[in-house]
Length: 476
Image (spheres, rainbow, N blue to C red):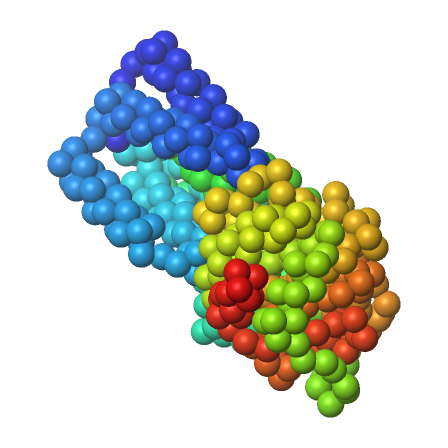
């Protein structure tokens, strides 16, 4: 496809689209403004797409519009049907599609460079275009294969435990160095006409492989950072392809997604006390000597509570802090939980929600669920803002969380979650811990000392069912 002559209005349209994307990111930084952020993003994308369609010679506009209709229809159906519990794996799946799209664009440019305006007078692909094409294909392939593994781990198709290959760091580093070397060779190759150089195919194949190798050593407890990092990769892949397509909007959008994803990954790593460089290297937080934090200790003495116990003690409390986790999402208990909070407030109880940055296997997962249940934003607090209040809390009410309240992160250097900031729930006067059974462990596969503390009462049940029973007791 060939662009029309440069038109100042095109630059203005892409600039407006870019501003909309920035406003979208700003809006998505808070649950209170997230809907407005989504609207800005959709409006900006509509401007970018329409501008591109109008200003470029497209072989078959009906085919393009048909593809948009099919893709939009599929996206609409998925968005309507998807459960919030499946949102992390859905995001991983979408990232894989972005990566695959970047690879396909690079392949199309490699096979038919003249259509992309990147063929030189000597019959070879322009050197700078070769670099853009190779980097876009490499990052896209890594994003695709890495996202497939992340999806499989999150969806339960693959074990969430780290899969550790012998000498994996040497293999990963060697493969990455080889990809960069082949990219340099491809960029300066004497003969690089349409589809001629085997170096390009080698880069794509190795990039698909390294995507798998980087993600399979990472355990399920670290998946939130992986999802965020893959989001960044997809952005950089799109930006690289934007250069190949000579599309300013694609470059700006990809750079925004890539940089924002990298920043979010850095914040997530800081929240988990992980090394940002180790995320990129793959297999951070996993080593062959880690035994998952020791053997299970279900035979230790513990106390079982009831919905009546929970209702009575929380009704008499002054301060209650609720810590939701992925188990709440699985049970879809957020609406019942909000009702419980309202009932407690009617009895004069001060109720707050404590949200860990990595709760829910995806950044912001818990915030979205609570917003869906109309929980007031001013009752929701992040870890650093509320952790000091557990010492004054009468009740810590844990519903579906586990690793984020495990004191082993502070005390057990052999634990795979050691160093990760966690809620100090053990300092609360009373702890109610909703869990399906004593046999299950957290996503990181480690036992939790909170189960066996003197002030802890285990509420063994489905989260939604237990909260509904507590609500019934509060109204009796």
